[in-house]
Length: 178
Image (cartoon, rainbow, N blue to C red; front, side, top):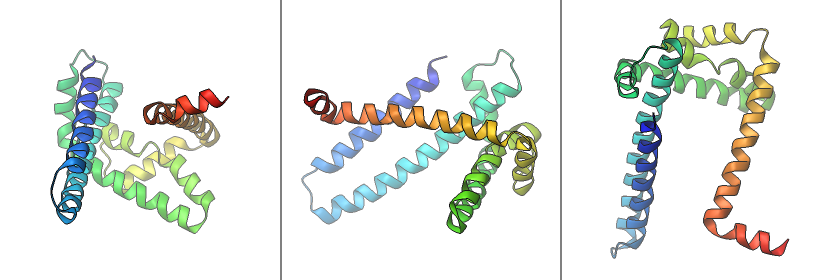
């Protein structure tokens, strides 16, 4: 269904309008800064909540191809929310630690820990066992996962760059100079 896309568009518009409102309010700068920080924290909380629930609903859909609606899948993902956030936090810190140590361990960990959320939702393994399960799922498939992730990442990067240039108006200037 188109419900997830509509929700994402509505949330995005609310974030844009809120940011514009903070920028144009006729109040002292200190108040604007405080409001911008509060707005940023609230926006981050909403993004984490919606993103975690929607990705959980998508994973549950892949695991169970029944005729449930998207809203039913979101409700099914709610009990997993805090566990999914915990999986995300430990995955990020593991990848960050590997990246700080050297770039290559960070890349390796980002590939082998890619399936941690899938292991959590489908096999109901929590915390470190989900990371270990992800590592075992990716065993023997490292390069396939790496190259697919790289290609998708490059495609997304190009799309974001084109949209950013188009939205900012610089895209027209670049096209006109070529």
